[in-house]
Length: 269
Ligand code: MLT
Figure 1: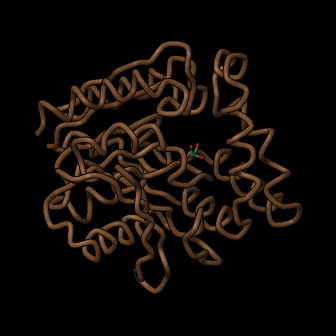
Figure 2: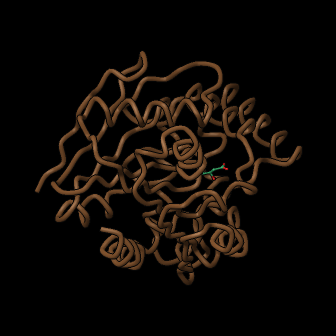
């Protein structure tokens, strides 16, 4: 089976989306500052049984950039409109990594009828601390002055575990290339959006949807204890910890992640 790349007019921008396979919809929402390319292993695997929809979010990959701030709510509205354009009427299995998870919370808040299940990889539900906000704004400044090259290599130890860096240097190289190719204004806009995102920790108990949480044991950005706490608060969730991988579990341990997702989706189907 092959992947199709489509361009859709979504809320005033051109949004690029990769579609593959047939079956119930599986929406894959990438992390920051990446694109749908981070999901290649999941697209290849799940297109056997699902319609896999992997967009480039506003500001990233092949999608148009908006200058300023792109809120998590805006990203969620783009996804809802994209699904409408693609005539996906049934509720989706929404899989988001990190920023993709922040967007999932907004998608749940505004479009709960469009959600069948949640798969949340290496993410969190609380808002930023003051220090977190200030670090994000420093990154915005750096990227707008010096380009994404100024941040790409420095991000790798936060994205990949030491084991992955040692064993699979090509994953780090690919990520660096992807970040360096990203648009500075696109990075800045979503970074500002994340800085002002809402806190969902206290409403997790209202999310009555089957949920699978996946986290790398060595994730330093959204560590296992944070995800376990989220799983305990979500009414229908379990948490799977993948050993020796970091923040990019679906890339670093594709087979294990695919298996965990497949088992979860088979029960929820
Ligand atoms: C991501 O992977 O999307 C980022 O780590 C999210 C963030 O910066 O909070």
